[in-house]
Image 1 (cartoon, protein in one colour):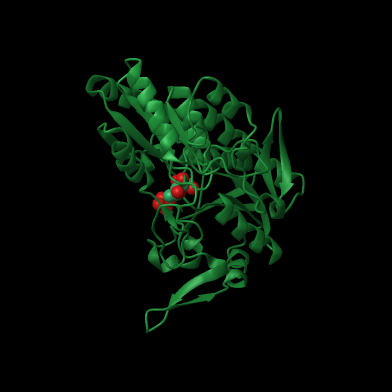
Image 2: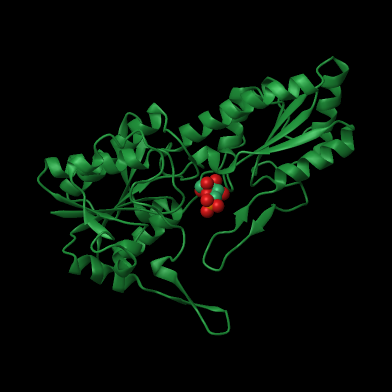
Length: 366
Ligand code: F6P
């Protein structure tokens, strides 16, 4: 059995734990493991790599000690989707080609029997297309945003929440010393999980998430109430995908073959809060810091479990499924179901209720 591993989309802490786990579990079964560089580029464009290194044999000594490293030793990309490959035309426009069958033929040529693809909704959708085109595929869910519906959590999220919480703790220091309002913008795309969990954990005073379109008047009122009782500072956590009621998301840009890039909402919120309260408001954008550095123990553990479950799935003859956490088990769900729906914060979830109970504003009250 020859199994390939590929990591696609944004990097997430815990990817290397999955790579290590797959390599150990597969080689212990006497299987061969092939690491593909930069999504599928290593296989599709071998000439761009030093002789033979685009898709190379992963041996157990090569994954020794990588579990605690952030990022992915295989590299990643969120460009050049092989199922909708952008080809630039002389006039600067793009034509999109479906290269799925070509990619499957490259897997066959390399003697690869199955693919373990580790990624978010984008990479898992590519996995589903490859499966439909005849390749044996197992998906492993990866996202710091926690927005994949069929697994209770994916690795990367815990580290992101941990880093965001610690960063908000640090912002408190200057906020209290200088009696300022601080707006902390965090990633999360169209889901508010990172903002909600880190904001509640760090004791923020307002949290703005995509699931609850906000008005800033209630947030300003909360800041003024705090002011009146002698608390001259406030922390507002804003998810990058949050949007004002009757307004729209803040988008930085969108390249031809990529998802829109969110960002900038934090500064807009800070400016408006200054206008409403007269207080100095500063913005901190945590951005990619949430994806970097050492994965938490939980993300390494989950990565190791997912990698082992993916190899077990192949051993059990499964195909076209994604491994999914459903404690105490790891289940297998059809890839097609996993990519079909996004998980956002339910408005009746306990964390949201607890946050409201302790007095956190979501910009939707009075
Ligand atoms: O999906 C993970 C994520 O980090 C989102 O939270 C964020 O919107 C996006 O990726 C940023 O992607 P990039 O690194 O391509 O700008």
